Image (cartoon, rainbow, N blue to C red; front, side, top):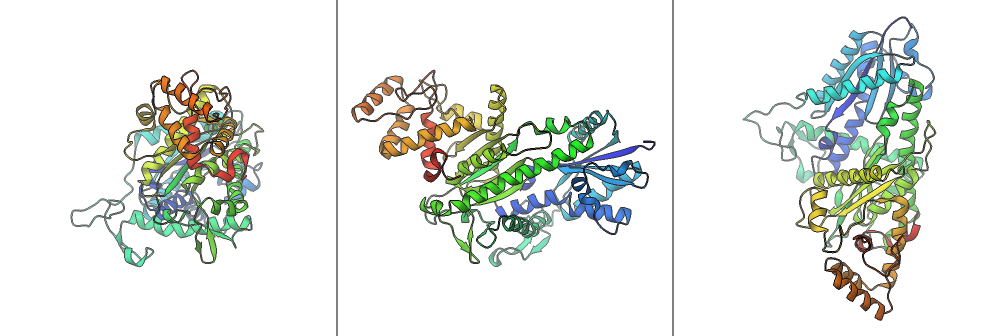
Length: 515
């Protein structure tokens, strides 16, 4: 190729803070849609105007014809490399056009996506045996740019303006998308998120249509309509799931065709796993109701007990009724690792499930779910394992600090290193569930609570408790090297985890059921 090709790599900064900065689920959903849409309608608008295009066939060409690299043709001046995993890679024949795009695209985001912080990198790209090297250099430049400069993307406050109660920014826009008793002036940031939530709802509706479920179910954008019973203590589960080793897999692709195919098939794997969760809910809807979960109706349709917030290239964040979160996360992990991607290697993911009171600060709950995901990834790495892992935590009142501090402070006992064995490899977790099932079937609730209490005590209390069980003809469930004759082995115990799962795992789904 005689002419140079210039690549633009796009990303965003502090996405989680942008999406989860409010307890309002509708704004969370709208913010997530805005993040995704920066590579859709806003990118299309800028490119169409820059090159006077009459259609947007170019937008899906990289997926439909991954083997065709149009930018190598003399007549082509622009091409999409790929879009996925929170990034977009664009190619330009002329460097000045690449820079013009960045200027116009970021200017547009200032207007339509206030508060969202974009990041960009530009550099020459090679399509020969140096493709991988040039892509990796581009990612390094992007990382450097993200750390060195954070642009101002929100209109500065003035002393004479009122403060938006949702964001703390200036109240600038009257919002009529809110319930009549909440309508008021709000910040441009909140307004953009609320406006985008309706578009996100339509996108979710299409997924239900693909599964032929749109006539039966709908999604909610209210946290208190996920199946909780009014007047009772209620919980939600905030679930964050992220693919394992995805970044290194992307950077290891040797050429553009491989990169495109990997990005496309990874995205499909994520959506297939998400659809499997919806199918599982439909299959078990009566069982879910029998668990005491209150599935409300809206417009003649049943409100699903989960709501996705982010569905990305290899990650997903959703919120569900508290008792269903761990079960749904397990389904996603098992279905995700069944999927095939273009490089032929197995895929896996790690999940973090934070179970909180419905009124608990949502951003803090999300942060905890991210910490739990990192915990699962760290344990996986420490074990040198290639599978999927899961960690979970139930938030009780009065516990503060990060996950490590909480477990160090509140999950200790004289005779154990930690009361929790989690995180678990998903296959081990399935074995643990068999123990949960046996515990629920053979132990009265009072004895389960006594077991929990005893675990916090000295080793001598353990022996007395085990003798009491023997007299009553009870035996603890087995789990791996635990045969049920001892509470603790090598200063470890699986029984605290089992106890918590008796409260926050649906009974119909124990021992592999409900899937």
